[in-house]
Image (cartoon, rainbow, N blue to C red; front, top):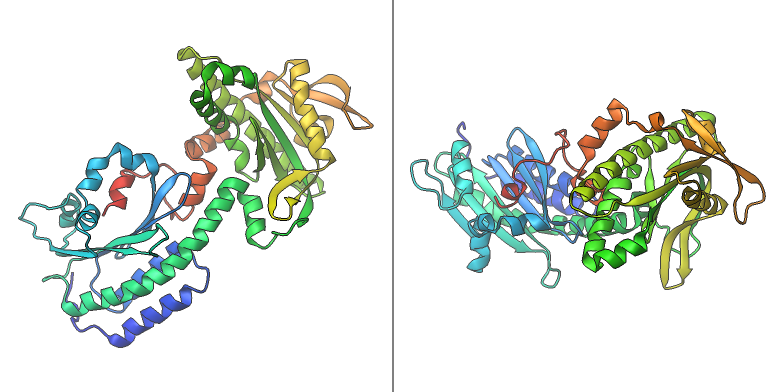
Length: 449
């Protein structure tokens, strides 16, 4: 690294502090805050080679969300899953952050010399990058919140950090904590609503649809799916094993319906309702129907893989039924004045549920209404006409021929790219920059730097 002016400009540092305060009131994301903060520090002349910041998160899948800024490369985002720390506790025990926790310290500074043994494993990597000085810190985001910020500053300046630079970093650390806390609180609320209500309903609640009776009606392609023989499986497998079976089943069958325009509105027992909003025009309706049926193909293939694996384990395969329809869906807040749920209802919802139940009668896993097939197209066979309970007119019921269920090449690729990441995981990793959609190498390493 070239020569750097050792004198820290108080004016520029004040500008960074002012920006953090303004940002804390602007509902910016953590990534925006971290990236803007690091770039402004570099622009102010602070000799930073690398900055790492991690924030504890209240989330069903993740313990922490981490950001690593490298000069000239921008910010990389990583999520630490609950099980990763349990699988690799040694890495944590040998990290600078454990040293801080174990000794009840707020900061630890270490000069990095290329020819001396590394006190912490992360130093081996930093040496290769030319690092000369390292400061790790830990800061609570509230005495009773259970959330905190840990991080590290690294420089490659000859001679390491000066006292002026260290003073500026310590000062700005407090301002960063305030802005980060505001962003974390907003992200926690967003995570919880997205995880438990779904992305579509979560956005509506966050935007203010919180009163009983708030809601709207949309026209959409509807998908209703349900597990078969669930009671028998629950009794045979026992509570914990059945919960694992249910989660594996949802991972296989439901995930494809939660992307490419689809939204899972609700899980009911061992079933779910998904919608593909399409409006009333023909072209968007055809597009939504084809996307929904593409998800059916993906779900069918995934269920075949799941059941093949279960057979190898000597376990019973999982049966399922899927109904496809099109119509108006009303969804909004219903319930008690002090206990609401975001639910979907209406005649089309009742009709798709009854269509799904017809898979039991006709011994076909997938059936659709004629209205859906007219938009979707493809190779279908009529099963007959049925009068659905509570509906005046009869419905023509069809099922897809075997060839129609074979996944297309682009659908296989899309499913492989997104496989292994649930909707909640996608939410936590949506900040990721233009990087491959495969899990990054050594997530836990990135979180303990």
